[in-house]
Length: 404
Length: 225
Ligand SMILES: Nc1ncnc2c1ncn2[C@@H]1O[C@H](COP(=O)(O)OP(=O)(O)OP(=O)(O)O)[C@@H](O)[C@H]1O
Ligand SMILES: [Mg+2]
Image 1 (spheres, protein in one colour):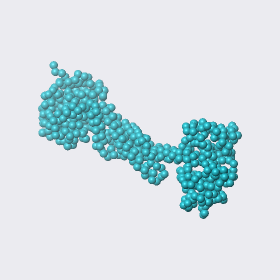
Image 2: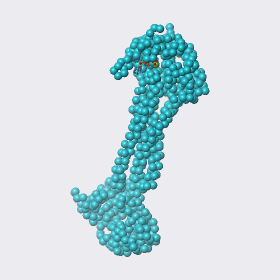
Image 3: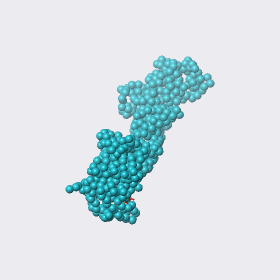
């Protein structure tokens, strides 16, 4: 039984090699469409991973939540008042047992100047726990502390890109102006990934109290970042917090929320949505190319079977059953699928390397893609060989005595 | 009493080319005993190959009965016919019909491959056959590296590997020079002496002489000589 099967495979493989051009084109067609499929799929994975990594790196991977003042759609203009979120609301939320940390902040875009540099930058008034809440620590110098809050000191911590923009080597201790007030630089933050238009590394951080009283002159906050106990049910957390805020803001019935709750899932879905649309489109193209390669394989299989008709007739005359003949050609297509599957996979890894040179997307290694490549190759190969294989099994062995 | 291996009664076969019917076999009756060596002769187009296809279970008659080795076979399914072909019948063709990418040895083993139980002993047996036919030095040669006579001997070894009861040969010497033809016929004679039943189609009287009995077919029917 074992020798039989080995000899059977050997015969199939030799038949494939007997027409190398045919063989090459079958593999080529399949390989090219697999490269497209694998690459597009891994680009999607890579982009998604990048978003996930980026979110995780600012402590927004999971068990976190961001509440932003002002209601409306997640992305877009606010449609309600934006001055209703207060520190007292945060105090109330903090009482929830699953909330482990709450870091309120206020923000605005203000003119920042230093020597001949003057530009509008994002200024955030924050508490010391901002570092933990966002997993964002100073790279040099120190962060805002309790004393700064109590004394309303005029100090600031800069995003990683700012010192370079200001053209200064030794920025610590320098004085910069924010909306006309002079602030002392006490630290520079480590670099963090940006989302969309918002360049995180170009923020200026100042103490919360200083921001409220001396810069923005307001009593409401713009956002609060919350961290939860590990494994907290996000849906439940969101409902409880919404309930508290609506009650405190006197919103009843159909009155819309005057705040927005952003969960990690929501953030991910917003960031990956456009990506997904493009990806689905590209995947559709890849699948169409797979079908085209299937049709090419089908035609070349037909040609092969035509060419080998006397040999197939011989096999039938010698006692091969229809099943055996069909098996023969399906295994042949599986050979092609395995070769193309491996080639398509390896070449797509190379292509990803090349793409990563020109785009921020990093190559990603995943056995899923290997499996995907194999499955699609086998599926395409086998399904498009089925009809030619059945045709082969129906060849009339009587041609053996007639073909001369 | 000698057993009848092949009994054909009233076999007819008509081919249709478009709307034109052409009756190739017009009532063939034939009995072949076990151990016989029969030659069928006739001019080109008389229906020899058509008849051999039917005897070899490669084709079905339109009418008539065919009893092979005591079994009525004219109504069997494709699958059953393939099974019987593999067990009982060996074929030798004018065009040899060897698989071009397989070695002499692999070609000989092919019928066992489709039986699905190729064993180590079979390889040994194939080597014995090839040796007996004077091909011991050519076992790993491809058909393209063999002479016509050698190719036909490989084909004979392939026909014998399944230990068939009946050997069918359609113009086995048609593509061979006279020396190789004589060699092949000597092999046939030898095999027949050892008990193998042979039905051979030829239109060469010199070749037909090797058979015990000659039947002549003319326009799809046997005629007296
Ligand atoms: N599949 C077919 N369709 C139509 N006509 C056929 C078919 N096979 C054979 N014929 C015709 O049947 C007749 C007998 O053919 P067959 O091959 O049996 O002759 P033959 O006696 O073997 O001739 P040769 O000595 O040339 O081999 C021929 O006229 C041939 O053209
Ligand atoms: Mg003929």
